Every structure is written in structure tokens, then in C-alpha cells.
Image (cartoon, rainbow, N blue to C red; front, side):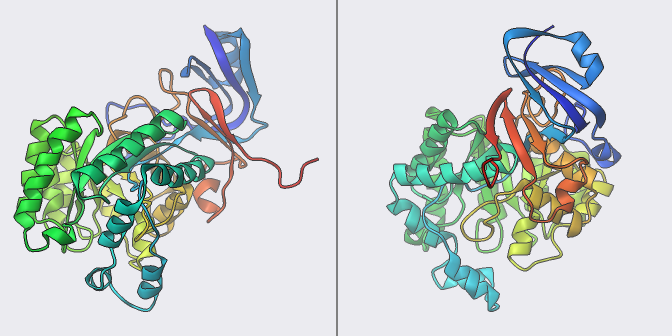
Length: 424
């Protein structure tokens, strides 16, 4: 079998074996570990993986093949960040200081902060400014081993400004090695100009859907269904319209208060529901028997001082499929590192390192509609490979706040490499 890319000398390889869908329960602990391993790819797709001697017998290298020696290091699939708000203008460090002094999310919003302050900054920013800022963030994510990112709009709240954000995501997709999955989140908040006309804004969001679809700018439609955001009835109206147009569905669910959004997401066949700090027992039960992935965002809850986080153990133990994301955004979580999220998933949400790895790769891929393509290093998957300055997969969440990434390969091509602090 021909190969134009080969990594040898992998001390421990995390393959994350494929399954027919997102993994649940004990299956989340199977990382498919291989010692003294190698991986080969052709045209960006894995063609051989396993013990090095077996891989070398199976392949023949093309004349221009790139061969990399991992030097006994750990390697695994590129991380999939299942929830981000990548494109926006401005920062909200003032709000962070207010929260440190005890102000709540809703109190800050009532004082003109929150999502609407970012809306103002995003509307004022040019597409070029938004793209440059988001590109720098993507570079940081890539340096932390993330090779696939879901990117939501939601800071424009007019057709023109929502399209502006989504067009930036498209440009980034064309110019960045990171795979981007665009999500339309026009129902992120009711803008100030519609404060007394909520129903009109819901109607406007539904109208926006047709144009977003016509321009093919989003794969998913998301709604923030929570206290101070959109009601269950409003959410259902928007999602029904999105479903008729062929969009995949997502829901910001039960973060600030229980609203029944998780149950709605399951009933409507949403691909994912996200946050879930206040999810009900019934919601957990419905997730355990549905195809909807529970995307947990522990960096957000810690950033907001809610250190109890989402009930990951109850979700996993009852059979729900759980994924992870950073929730990178300017107000409630500025984290860009999936390894940091894995640390918090283990230390705060009481997930095992194996569960966290699966949630940050295989299950996250299903949460963004790319199940079967990324999130594993089995044959037939994209050769999105991260080599770490580590020897064991448990070191990734264990090294709290470290960036242990040595190099990143996207579809078999090197896209990031750590440079020495001092050149020889």
C-alpha cells in the first residue's frame, strides 16, 4: 500500500477506535492504545496504523514521502473543539473584574454588558478586523492540538452582521489548516432595538435562515434557550424552521436555569445540546436514549465561578454521549486549549482521562457533524495527528495549564511545530 506520510517511533499511540456513532458509558474508556507504533497516510487519509513493524510491512513509500520520527513520544488524533464563538469584536475584561467582585451574569447584562456589548463591537468591526483576530485565535488553538473547530455566529443580530461573521468563518476555512464547522446563532440574544418587540425579532431570525441557507454559510442552527435569552416556544419555532430548511440543530441548553431545552433538543433530533449545568433528571434520561450529544463546557463554569459544573458523571453513567468544547468567547470563557478543558473535565466534572480524551476527539466529531471523518486515527480517517512532549496519554490532562504539544499534522501535512526557546 502506498504512503506519502509516515510517523515512526511513536512510544504510545492513542487511536480512539471507531464505532457506529458517539460513544457511551464504558466504551468511552477504550482509547485503542498501541505501543511502539507507526502511522502511515496517503493523500491525507490514514492507510496503515498499529505496531511499527506491522505498518512497515504493509506500506511502500512514495518517492517524495515525508517521514517523521516521533522519538518515543505520545501521539493521538487532533482535538475537535465542539463549541466556540470564534468571530467577534472587542473584549470584556471589565466584566471579568465585575464578576470577581460578585456580580452575576444577569446583573452584568442589565448594566449594558454581556452579549449585547460584544454585538456593538462586532457590528462596528470590519470583516478584515474580525478575520485577523479570529485567525490569531485559530493559531493558538492549533498550537494546543486542535485541528477541527465549530464556529458560531451570534454577535451581529442583524442579517448583514450575521452574514459578515459567517463569511469570515468561510474565509478562515479557506486560509487556515483548521477544519471549521459554521453554525448560525442569530438567536443568541434579543438586540436592544427589539427589546420591546421580541416576537418581531424571532420572526426576523426565521427570515434570516433562508438567506443563510441560500448562501450555504452554515451547517447548523443554534438557539440560546435560557433565562434572559429565548423561551422554549421561541426556540421551538426557530428550530422547526431551521429543520425544514435542512439545517442540523443545536441548542444552548439549561446553563443558567432549567428550561426544558435539553428535552426539546432530544425531541427534535438535535445533533447536540450544550452547557447543561441545570439539566433535569428527565433530560439526562432522554439524552441516554437519543442520538443528541451532550457538549459540556467546564472551562466556562469555572471561569464564571460555578465550580460544580455540569453533571458529567450522571450523564455518562446513565448512557448519554458526552463531548467537550472550550466555549471560547469574549465574555464567559476565553480559553482556547482543549487539553486545559480536559484537565477541568477530569478535576471538576470527575471524568476519567480516557473519557475526556474520547469526549475531546471522537464524540466531539459527532457533535459537529464530522463523525466518521475525524476524531480517530483508524484507517480511512483524516491523518490529523498531534505529537506531544509526553509519554502517556494521562499526562495531557495531568499537566494542568501546560502546552505539551510538540507538532501538529493536518491531513498528513505539518501545520505547527514547537520551536526551541533558544536556538542551537
